[in-house]
Each structure stands twice: as C-alpha cells, then as structure tokens.
Amino acid sequence: MITTISLNPSIDRTVEVEQFTPGGLNRVLSSHMNAGGKGINVALDATALGLDAQCIGVMHKEGSKLFEKRLMVNSTAYNFIWCEGSVRINMKVRERGSGQLTEINEPGEPIHPETLEKMTDLVQLHAENSDYMVLTGSLSPGCPEDYYRTLIETVRDMGCRCILDADGAALSAGIEAEPYMIKPNIHELEQLTGKKLETIQAVRNAAYKFISKGVSIVAVSLGDKGALITNGDESFFAPSINIDIKTTVGAGDAMVAGLVCGCMGEYDLIDILRMGVACATARCCTEPGKTLDKTVYKALLNMVQLEAI
Image (tube, rainbow, N blue to C red; front, top):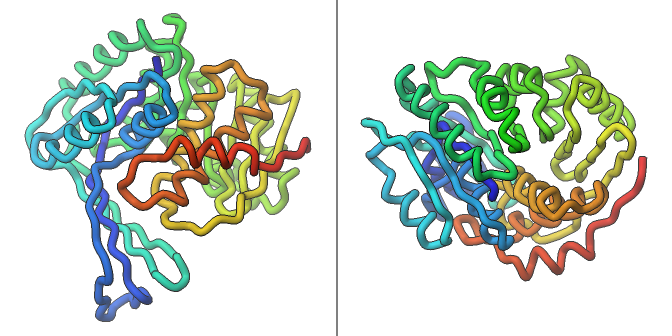
C-alpha cells in the first residue's frame, strides 16, 4: 500500500492565453478547474499505474466535492480530517505560443494545533498498513516548518518507508529525519546547497551530500533537461523525451508516482529512474485534468535513455 499525505490540497484553475501581459489585459482562450494538490496527484497517478494507493490529509468542506468525485471516479481511497472553511484555489496561466506557465498560489486556510494532532494520529494509523508513505506539497499557514520531520520520525519504526517531496524549510527539516527518498527539483536542490548547479556532475555531487546524511535515494527532476538519481553507489541520468507537451502541471507528482512504483516492485535503481521519467512524460502528454494513461506510460518506458554518471 502507498499512502500519500495532503495537508494543503488545492483547486487548480488553469487558463490559457495567447501571450501573458503583466499589468495589461489578458483574454482567456480556454479554462478548466481540477481537484489537485501534490498528495492528491501522486495517489491518483499511482492508482492509474495499477498500484494500491490512498490519500490521507486535511480537507476543508467548501470545494471538497470536487476532490471526492475525482478520487472516487478513479477508484482511489481517501481518509480526510474535515475542517470548516474553503479549499484554496491556485491559478495557473499558460501561454499558448511559448508554453510558459505562470502560477499564482493561495496559501490556504490556517491549520489549528488540534487538527495537527488528529493528522499525526491518522498518519500513525495508516502507516501500519503502508509500505511507502509520500509526504509532499506545501504546508498550511500555522503548520510548523518541521512537521514533515515529525511525521517521518513518528513512523520510523513502523516498517514504512518515507518519500519526501517538499521545498524550503519543510524539505530541510524533513531531511534531518532521514527519509528513504527525497525528490527535489533543480531549483530546490540549488536552494538547499546554496549554489548554482550548472552540470550533471555538479547535481550528482550535490545529491551525494544528502546520501551522507542518511537519505537512501536522491532523485532530482531537471525540468526539460531530464532527471537524475543516485544512491551514493550508482548514479544515472535520463534526458527528457521529445514529445508534444500538453501540460507540465503535475509532472513532478507523476515522477514521484513512477519512482514509488519502481520501489514497490524492488527494481534496480536505473529502472526506478526509467519509471519515474516515463510517468512524468506520460503526464505531460495527457490533457490537463485527465487520468494518466497507463498504455502511454508503458510505451514511453522504452523511449527513456539512461546513462551512468
């Protein structure tokens, strides 16, 4: 069982414009809304790959029907702590010509200490039957920056491996609890190390730092340049696949789903990366809001090129 944690889900509203003009008039060419958030996305993509996955977390009542419908339609189990208030809305503006994406994200409703206590109890409950737990996404206002570290430490002795995909202070603090895997993107890794990483070798060497701190696997998404993975003994790089991109929203979450799929199957490190890149690419060539196509994912597996570094 894979359990994902969603502390701050969002309704993602994506609009497409011909060219985004800051401070000017922007006419919308198309628009759609989708129940999202990183924990939700990872659980849905893992289910689409055929894995037994569920999502647990905090859910506000206003706007929640969209999430329940999407999860149920895709046969993904969920267990939420229900709170008063509204689910936050994240606006994503995509330029049709360049494909450039501008994101405007709300912080979400404040989270209260009693809700965090309930959430910790819920995590413990589900960790008992989980092989992997994915801690991902932003923290709600009022949530301690080290809360992911607290959760990882809480389940450490329960036989459940943790995968952390966060940024900033939440990622830094979470690493101190020695999760099984972290998946920063290149910008998050540069922020962690405090320096620009301009070559694949520099990215690999930066990732080694966290292996030495007790993380077993570091996977780094490099955007349109591809991805890298290392466990300290082996390191592999996969360039991106040239496809017709329909969206980049959720690509990082899909990569996590592919990586955890490889871990669940106890594949070699090189194939874990292959699955992560194929799943992220499958998301990029799927229309926004649509379920990830497992057939497309399988076809892309053979297109991933890998090299030892």
